Image (cartoon, rainbow, N blue to C red; front, top):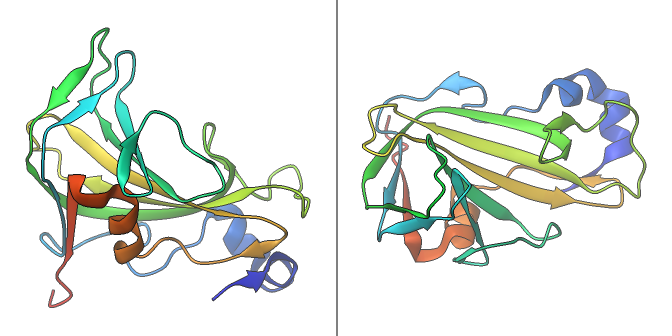
Length: 173
């Protein structure tokens, strides 16, 4: 379901500026409700603390007009880092409606044109006890032409990351 941005601004502009929340947005998640498992070793490029996924595979660069995800770890290194598979428990979920994914600037700050590309950002924060200090999985759903929609669902996120990560949602929590 998508809705025109102008309608959202008139009805709930204040909620959009601060970020939209759905499901567990901005709240603690019951331990074990969402789990992410690395299915194979992942390489974090030199000079970075994250790796990117798009179209079901790990990529160096992304097409901003298609959904993508980033797996962030705690450490930046001058050499590529190999992260071995480990289970990751999601302990918090946040959502934000942003216009710049680098600065995370809220979409309506400074005005918004229908020509602007905007993003619905979902961040799954991991339990800090992971071996590699994996911090989060952050995914972006791009929207254009003043059309705004929901954040990526867990199923859509799985399609973006492909078989490198397994996403399991236990809604029995």
